[in-house]
Structure formats: C-alpha cells, structure tokens
Image (cartoon, rainbow, N blue to C red; front, side):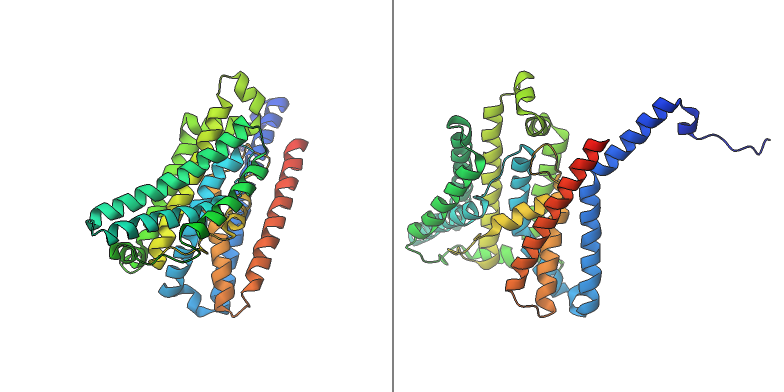
Length: 348
C-alpha cells in the first residue's frame, strides 16, 4: 500500500468549487455565531458565579434560576417569532400582567359563587389565554390594517394593558384563586424540576418545531427577509403577521398563568418591564432586529444568560439596580455583535 496522503475533498475540487464550499461553510458559521457566543457567555457566567458563590450550584439556586427563567423564556418565545418577521412587541410584559389578572378575577368570581374547583380553574385559564390572544390580535390588526409601525402600536398597547391591570381590580392584587394553582406553581418533580419549568419546556419544544419544521415557520422567515418577495410568492403577509402577534399574546398569557401559579396570586406588578428582558434574550440568542434570522434555541440560551446573571449577582451581594444596568449593557453589546455579523456576512 502507498503511504502517500489522500487528498482532501476540497483539494480534489476545482478552485472555484472549493471557494464556494469554503464560503458556504463561513456563512453557516456566521449565521450560527449568535448561538455559539451566547452559549459561551452562559458557560463563563456559570463558572464565574460558581467560583464566587458556592451556593450557586445548590438546589435552591437552581429552582430560583429556572423558575425565574420561565417568565422571560415564554415571553421570549413569542418575541422570537415577532422579531424574525422584522417586528417588535413591546406589550408582552403588560399582556402577561393583564391576562393573569383577568384569569385570577374569573377564578375569584367563580369561587365566590361556590362553583366546582375544576370549572373555575378551567374558566380562569381559558379567560387568561383568550385575553392575551385577543390583545395580540388587536396588535396585529392595528399593524396590518392601519399600517402603523409595530413599535408604536405595541408601545401604545403596553400603556393600555398596564392601565387595564389597575382598572380591573382598582389597583389591588388578587389572591383568592384555587389552591391547586399555588400547589402546582411550587411543586418540583423529584425536588429539582418545577412544574412551571416543565410546562415551559414543552412550549419551547413546540415553538422550535413550529419555527424550524413547518410552513408557518418558513413563511415567518420569508416575511422577515423580504416582505415584498414573500407577498409575490403568494404568502398572505397581513394574515400571517396577525397570527404572529396572536401567538405572541397567547404565549404572554401562558407566562401570566405561570407567574400566577408561582406566587399563588395575580399582582398588578406582574410583567412590569419584562419586555426589555424578553427582547434582550432573543437578540443575544442570535436573532436580528431587522428580521429574517433567529432561533428558539438561541432564545432559550439567551433567557438563561439573563437569569443566571441576575441570580448570580444576587448571590454575590450586588445591589439590585445593577441588574438592570447589566441587562441593558448586554442588550447593547448583543446588537453591536449583530451589526458586526451582518457586515461580515455582506463581505462574503
């Protein structure tokens, strides 16, 4: 047998073909760079906080971090679909609080009327999900029918839903809800897997499949990449965008239910300012604010970056207001990295 080295596949190709393969590999790496560097940041944060605070690896820390991530991840899932289309939803935090309040008030009203627990629970959940989806439908209709920018529409809806939260119960919290809600919100399977985390994981998997493996996801990417081209290809852009904002509202309502279960009450402060953290999670996960790029996996990693950072800062005794400073800094850094990646992609 000859000991001569076997030429590589690229070396055996003609020069133009080899350059095309190399270019494709480079583009693939850059397109996945957001997820890769976000994962690297997450690993570094875990290592740093684990060294600075040994309690970081305790069960109590994991339960707090994972349940904290539920809120941002569910909002981030809906925000991922919106941002991939080139839009933005600033109302998700307010929808969380509003839908949770609606659901809690329905449960309370039925409890006062001595309705069976199963019925008041089902009615409360259905009411919350309906409220969130309806607000999302209003966002979509205003954006597509009135041709207003998503920023303006969802900013206005944020204010309306925030006011609605206070109007529903005169600015008070609702604590009269079925006991099973609080029980499920505090229960952890095997002591390590909270029910709220399990529910969120199911929605994350379903969202990932919807975005990556269905025509719905393909149309979402197409609209974000080129709305006019998508319309010429036969996609009903307006109808699809309404569905996207309804999905965002629905997932925000699910987040509202998870927060209600965690605290066994509906608070007027629930979801306040969460939209910034949700958008940050999506962007640092590799999504482009200009649309056409983003993954659920990236959003999952981005959500844990934020929650690990906040939990870690608390454990090492950093003052709470520095948490918002850190989140804002990460958002600016993520957008800067996104711009750099776009320039590198254009260079290829």
